[in-house]
Image 1: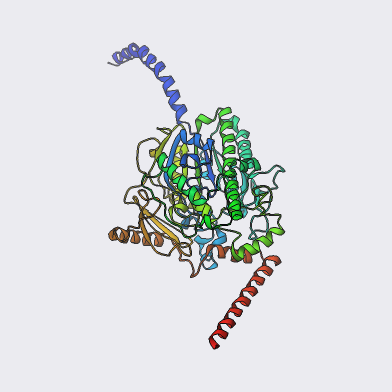
Image 2 (image 1 turned 90 degrees about the vertical axis):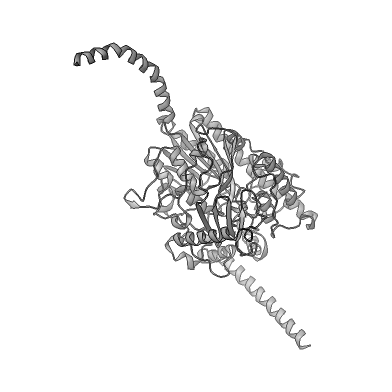
Length: 604
């Protein structure tokens, strides 16, 4: 019997060898496909929902458009409405109130900062995707804005990144190594964990891509995959761009912000980015363009031209990175993720009494605001709330607010794993989804309660790979509740509905209920029509706030005013204190004169 089995094996060996010869190339090809791909995560700063061409914007963005053509354009992706909370959730997959960054540290009042989860820096109860990927054999690189802590143990070089260039603050000048606001004594730049100077030809977008290419090239020969994180400064204030980029957009914004908002709405509808019946909500902070003087309209139009030029320049340098990867044979084996960290900036840094002081500070820090040099070296530009709201069109509001304009951002994912390139996904996705997505792409398991001998929080997001491969239409179940809070502005998403509250003076301090897919402009409050759903979601938010240790903001909390207090506490320079004291004296003087005038009128 044994001999019969052996003879049969001999008889079938040639056929088996023939089958193996046929299958071997397929097995090798399958193994090659199974090799983990390179991953490039590109993060714009304060980029509006419709600022790029794939989302209906008038600014040509050929590099981003190419990625959209090779991937999936997500129309319903949400980040936190401010930079540091987004970055912390993006890199960990853990809610901002658990990872230590519920707000930027510069805006956290002392009464909250006493709590361990309100320090505004990335704590050690989380593990970054950079750490997980590095431990799995990836090279890990970062070049760009960090803003998750600047002490040695909190810099990216200690949070899983092998090579780093990190600007550690909320922002900085794009031409020189200098701070952009008086809350910083200096611009804090680090390379591989050590303080660095910047090159003579420094421009932030160019520099970040230069260093990214340098890092990738330095290890290309070893064949190991890389994860490269490129968080740009564009288009965070100060908005600055090389003159040749600004020149391309001169005159394009002369009709003003309302006309721009309407044009972008029409384009977004035509592209299928938003439903055909989407309407625009009125936002109280949007000024009347026609009521401005000719000189003010001319100035505002050029500010927006600089903003467009800065986006154009960023796209150009993204294109340089893509070209490098193509020329070195790495492009086909790379997955790209492009997104913005939050909605567009809507603050007016130069308005009001804060603007008076800031202009004084500019005199000692080589900043100008004259029309002729807007955007160039030494110039300071911010586009303000009116153009800020237009940059988010057709959404309402902008950065810091929990309305869609603050949280819904462009996101494109491209690469060979995408089943139907060039498609649009309307699925609701959230910032914490990106960490598990990247880990699944890399075939790396997320931590489950502990990592490297320490307890860590579980990742709460859902992988988007099933959406990329065409195996699912949703990332989140219709009954899954996802809560959010930042600086007293709050929201909760469930299915296609959202409850949201934004504080004054721009918000109304009231909770609202919207269908954020059919009504992305948030024009139709459904609270009265759907009281049961509203009550259910309010209870969901209460549970979220309890489980995530969300603290209430103090009475009268104002994010911008808190930045002033932060400046006094951390950078008490004589010029600043003198200016504040002078403004306080002026305020008391004017108030006292007003009171005396009222008394005289009363006596009469």
